[in-house]
Image 1 (cartoon, rainbow, N blue to C red):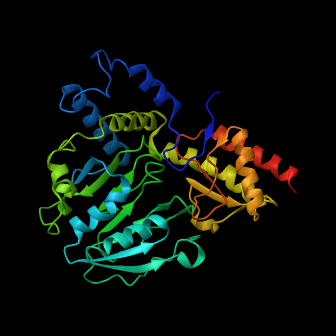
Image 2: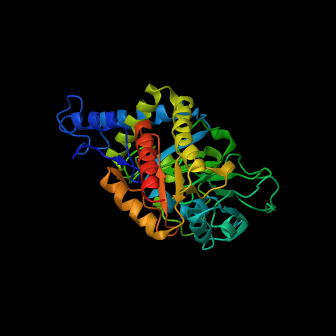
Length: 360
């Protein structure tokens, strides 16, 4: 069997040329006689790999020098605790809850201080982004927290909330590097890489240096202090070395296709094909209000659980994998991350048209 079109929400599709290159280097990385999987993270060869990856990420996003870039473990979910442990100086933080992951982060923060839910879209199954232009920001809040793209529900903040001068913390796991972003508008940007950038096991944290201090909540483990990792340039302990190496290759791939402006254009083109079809289909419909639609995750339903199940089964047989929606919402979801080729989205729409004809 050849490669399928993989619409998984993460771990997700990676660029084929990156996988081929990694395969070519598997046994012997550039003449050093060993695989990146086996080399010491303290070696000169590996040091070049991680330093180049950071430099390329900085240039892609235009990350200024007063921001630290850290390659960490524990996925995005560990950040739900690390952020309050390190940033909750006044023990107050404001959370905007627009999906499952923001909700989990909000619940986790309650362990460490007073977490306020200042806006939420739970009333309509997280199918929209609330108006965040004038929220009741707490005067003593240490930060305001958002999940920028909601993988499960397919919504995206098109406009950042007005934090009234407070530090903005954003989980960008499922929209990371899908389009340009102005890092200076945030205090912290972080994301698990297994959706758009690499294999599972790495989380990238981009953080304003002034937020990284020794002044953390009592009892914070050494490994969960940002300062530990910033001071050691992500090499305090053995990092997820191979995962970082693949991320570095993906950064080069994005540069090669023209950077984040080109990436955004490519992603908009792909998403338009699918959304245009959903808007005119008599069987399928998207679940998100138009103005808040994600470019990365597209949930849709037929309105019948039976037909949804049939669709998932038949699409798999047609080489369209992982279209089942998240267990918490059902239906279908197509994750069309950076590495999903436009042909994959066209193949999906062709299959949907055929399915619609056969199941009217």
